[in-house]
Length: 441
Image (cartoon, rainbow, N blue to C red; front, side, top):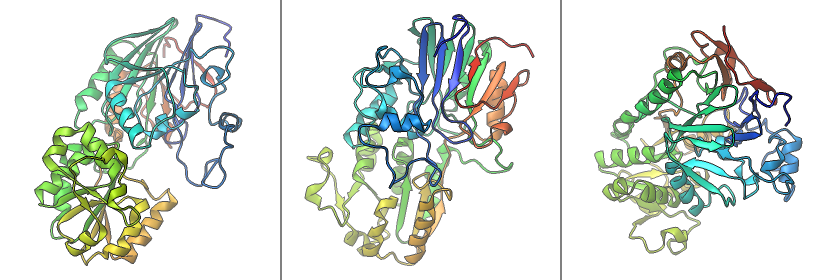
């Protein structure tokens, strides 16, 4: 991408507009260029590819680029004659922000926080990696990163995953900030508050903010993350079998289930992958709860994943669950619902949906979950704490930052984002250049 004025910095969004996720924010200042996030968009029934129509092996970059899913920025991909000095800064490790990193050339620099790096390492172990990357750089919160004429400052925010980061960037012509995803009702609201206070104190000319819950009906209660363990325990009272689904990259949520299980004297039973993440990323809580690992009908105990080899961990199968249904709290993800055939839940069984897959009714799999649970007489109960700011908190954050221009992303309702007190609200377009410079309103 060329500019007529080498001192006028610009940014371009290559995803995340009028959808949730898929964020790719490109910033260019003179000869310097950086990218923030490289996520995939989950839109069942609306995407260009599905479980049948797949990108061609070895031609994935061509196919994704032809459909506008990834940007035409040659430095990101194999075969570039310009080199690969276009770094990608990761805000956090949800797939809608990192899901397409596997398409990048291995030599592209990838920046991430220390907590994100720890998660990245363990995701590789359980088979949820992001492809080969030979130049991973771990940044320290609050320390500037110099990239030619650009300066990038990573700052913590709170989200429902460890290592979440927002960024403040100084360019040749102005400042730009990118929020990543954030909330104020998590266990660390001070992180989010400090981020937006910094933006307000350092004149943010352009703010790229997520607005997942913009336009949400007023009065909807947002459950604080700190209340989750108590709510889960209350939900399990006087129940027979209790199953649940969560997103196992949310380590604090696993810990909440562990605490709830202890409170009601049930044994926590996790899938092998979830148990591994809990053991390696929250070792103190893991040792306190000592969860068991679930062995599916298709998986003999002796063939558990190699990353569990040698561990002193109890195994539990469907027959044991069937024989003592009030003794366990069992993780049962969507792909394992067939275990209900062998467990045969008693009356009073429940399935706790706690931000696991499928996330909601927009996913066709959600209706299938409902059908399965109804077939076996299991009630589905939602006990969740979203990773995104409610409308009131979102407005407070925007007012605190008070940017010259707010660009709404990561939302189905960008026009309903709160406008800055003394600035402009813009609904951006994919692929369009926007200036980074002071604006007087």
